[in-house]
Image (tube, rainbow over all chains, first blue to last red; front, side, top):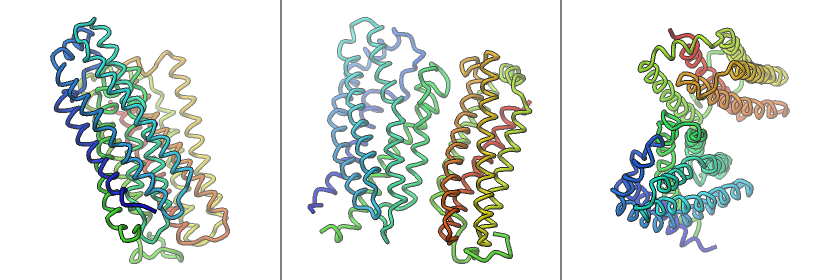
Length: 231
Length: 196
C-alpha cells in the first residue's frame, strides 16, 4: 500500500483552517456575524461596505476549502487502519464529511451572490445572507454525526498503540454535542439560540474550528509515529 | 472505592475509577452546561420581573418528582456497581434495569409536563424564561436519553456470564455519566423552579 501521500493529505486540515479563519474574520468581517434581527437595509449596507473584503474572502474560502477533501480522506484512511475497524463507521464518516464539503461550497457561493451585486434591492441581499448563515450553522447535526463516527471508531480501536488516543474519541463526542446548539435557530432572531448567539454561533464555532486544529495535530502526529509501520 | 468487602478490581493503587477519557468528557459537558447556567443567570438579572412572573407557571411538584426519580436511579447504579465488585451478576442486571426504569419514568413525567405547558399556551417563544425552560430541560432530557442508552448497553453486557474487570470499568464510567446527568438536574431544578 502506498502511504506516502497520507501526510500530504493530512496537511490539508491546517491549510483549510487558516484560509477559512483568515477569510471569515479578517477579510469578510463576519465576526461577530450580522444579526438575524438586522433590517434588510442594514444588511445591504454591510455588504456594500465590505463588498471587496467579502468577495476576496469567498475566493480564499473557495480555494482553501478544497483542502478539506484530502484531509477528510486521510482521516478515513487512518480509521480503516485501526484495529477492529468498523466499515459502517468509516462509511458514515466518509458520507457525512462529503456532505459537509458540498454544503460549505454552497454557503460560500451564497455569500458571493450577496456581495456580487451590492446595488440590487436590499431584500435580495438579505435573503442570500439569511441563506448563507442558515446553511453554515443549521446543518451542524451532520457534522456531529461525522464526529460521533470518528469518536466511536477511536474508542473501539484495539491496537496495542491505537491510531488515535482514546481521549480524542471522547473529545469528538463532546464537540459533537456542542454543535447541536444551532438546531433551533429558525425560531429566534435574538438571544443565545439565534444564529449570532452564544449557543448557536460561538460554542459551535469553537467546536467546528477547534476540531480541525486538534484533529490536524493528532492526525499528523499519528502518521509520523506510525511511519515505519506503513513503509 | 470505600467498600472494604470488595474483591474484584478495587485497588486504587493499580487503576483509577472509570476511564480518563470519560472523565474528560464529563468535565467538558459540565463546562458546556455551566455556560448555559451563566447565560440564564445573566439574562435573568437583566429581566428579573419577567422571569419571576413566568416562573410561577411552573409546577414544582414535577420538579421534585423528577429529582427523586433521578436520585433513585443514581442509587440503583451505585448498588449495581457494588454488586458487580462482589461478582453478584444477577443483582447487577436487576439494579441496572431499575435505574433504566427510573430514567424512563423521568422521560414520561417530562412529556406530561411539556404537554401541560403547551396546552396552557406556553411555548419557547413566549418569553426568555420559557425559551430557557424548554431548551435547557430539553437538552438535559437528551442527556437522560443518552444516559439510558449507556445503561442499556451495560445492562446487556451484565447478562453475559463473566463478570470481569473490563465490565466493572465500563460500569464505573457509565455510572459516572449517569451521575453527571443527575448532578446537572440538581443545578437546573433550583435555577428554573425554585430561585426567587
